[in-house]
Image 1: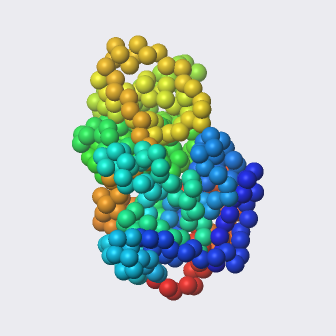
Image 2: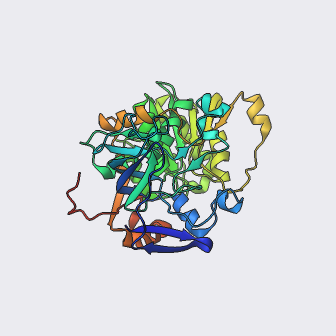
Length: 386
């Protein structure tokens, strides 16, 4: 089979004639049909991803953790000594897989906090080859079946959507006004999830005009462009900074835009930080109401924010981080299957064949051609095996 392999120093090669993975106990063999490219894949290729710099993960590795495919073979169970995997998975099923692969035995795993498992592997990230390959061996327990009517390219976006869903469920209540800081693919998925879970109004703030335009297309009530201090709104509500940018600071403009959100004249009930930038976190504190909730989803790469902690105490703020997506996969799959969330709406570019991996990565790295989410299909579109 073909597979993408990243070696020490970020050397990337497309390997032809790589062996098809041998199944271990309780694993199934998946024919990979679509893989999304994530910022984490870029970090792995550049050698800057935290697990590698900290020595927790080692090269070489096959990257790819946002994927969808079809089960083509079942391994044996570890409990029956020779029988086939008898979980919920069957040959022919269309499936997606969780990124976190835990031990299932420690206290965190037993308490359903398996994303904190000290013994965990992470698909395509840490000590487990990922999906930029034509075939993938995967634990049956960590697979989720997806309705065959959902295209593979759509299904591969379920993984990042689960991250967004968990962030929303941690803080958003029906009727809340929500500010999302970060206009990348995760920020846009947070917008979709906030809508699905009953937010009254959502503002997306960022620095990329085409992505902010996509946010409005996806249902944002307003957007705010930090790079130009401009605010745009949907046709149903006009949000505008009445004075010019030269007459007040970007921070003032942002607060005014937030207070206009939903016609309530106050700051946001919830702010979700999805940019991974210190300035974004500082803006989140400025945008949330007293007694409000801030959820931190972005990864900062060691950067530090300057925060007045008296704000947190005197304004009675709740701040919480979120990582991974434990416990939300079945409902996220259902949201996509029902059409309540159109996960494929963020896909802007498609590549065919693993040989296009370097091209796809270069586009995402450069943010060329207004790319938001790029998807690579390891097999040609003429392949009718479904």
